[in-house]
Length: 140
Image (cartoon, rainbow, N blue to C red):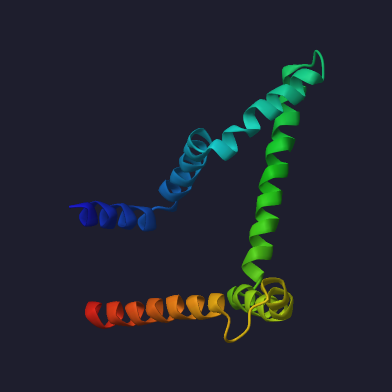
């Protein structure tokens, strides 16, 4: 039933771009009303405009529009930068970071190949790897 609803919704959105644009606009409004992150911006802009003293409705509209455009541009730039960064770079940087600080960590923890802490961690990791393998075999 849900699949049928989603398929018909998808078909109607693809058939008429106006519905898609209207839906995106409405979802933008709903996301502001339901998101605590976006809701925090409403008192900020109201407080900022109130701090300007007595201003006209036209000036308040202009300030609020510029504030909204600033947020839109900032989010778009962040999205563009994030989209341009390759997903693998994040994974590789964690590996490089961990490998770079191995000596510092080793010195801090004063672990060696035969220390009790290292052996316990290795055993726990080994058991987790084995359990993960068993789960993958079982679920296949």
